[in-house]
Length: 550
Image (tube, rainbow, N blue to C red; front, top):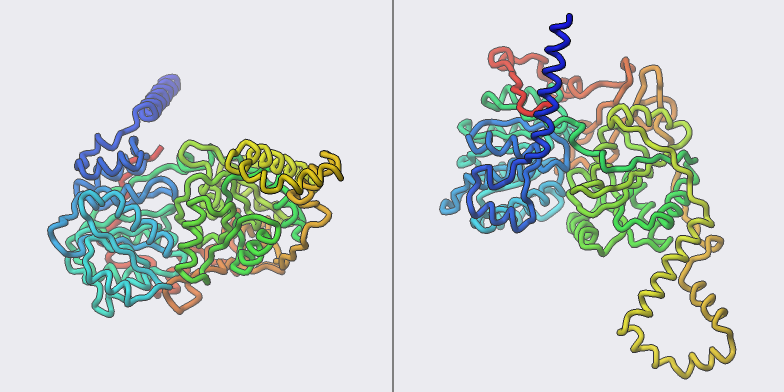
């Protein structure tokens, strides 16, 4: 027993030393055998050290190996697959050599922008294709030349069927956010695309989770893939202070806006459960004087991109979004995330709060929970391994005082601005007349009354009530078609296709299953009508080679 204990202690010590050494000696990009062109762009972008997923994936990908990367959004996956892919592109050949499949339009555009940025010095042409925009324009762009194409499944299939997208020269195939594409019902589309790509290729697959349906892709379409896994504890939440406020549904909006007045967030995202909710919250925030815009699946694509650009450039203070619309967005500088509606599954919560607390900066997440939704907090805490702190709602008086402070600071700044002061003399005669009739105190109070909204005179905002998510402690968990519930339907984007019904989220449970619920694997088998164990799976087997478990 003593020997066993000593061995265990030695093993633990070695593990600690390894962890400590890794933390202190992060791999730099110039140690990863990348070309000078790429390194110059990486340096220009301000990156020096590789993230864990980049450190482990890039060498394997450069060797030409198939890789399954298991990591969440915000960990640097685009560069992890993008840099080795760009490295292999032969710009002298006017052929499409790499294909990236992404679940959403936003993610496709974002990946395209990042790949273009890193490959600019080398002269790599990157095109993005997605639904909601003119297919003719995208066909024209492809004809003008592309080395890498990034697209959503539905639009890629459309282009393939029109013979506008040629896949015979593809050497690298990348599947980004594979589990999300599974959740959105894209599995058949993905398989159809992969079947048209040359068998002699490198395949890189990235997924936050590893359900059986994703493993099956590894079995069927990949050659002895290496598995790089970044542990969840490395992903997020350490720099995010997480709070919850227990509040009645009809009091949520006033509670949130008062808190915003007190917090004065520089840049914030508000998450709503449905498209209708996003529209109503956006309208309400604008009425209350916030610079807010919303994004969801029903918006015109140009509008969506314009909103995101304005948000990134600081022309908006608040972005209101559904889960799917915000998935994969890489927006720096977000200080606060407000969960107006508790998410329909715990993983969505992790994705939401991952929008803040980035690049070493701290952030805050506030979740508004109705009394009969309190049971969800424990499930979320079990996933994040971090307890949420209860937060007392800000009062109308506190919000009023905070707004006054903001107004006073603005007045001070304006008085210090010589350009503004130079215009004062235009009003000199009238000002002196007013000064003779009223005291300085009265004039100052009048100015403040024009600047600061009185809490008693705030415009009314009506947000349509939505039934809370049902919670069944005995085996319910998230979603479900419980009494008064909305089921687990995402209520958002089903991209690039007309069909509905393949996009249900699986419901999370603390234990057991209800008759109403079905997991992802069951759904996959039902939708695709494929048996659980295919012959190829039996023949090939699926071996996960762990390269980064912590």
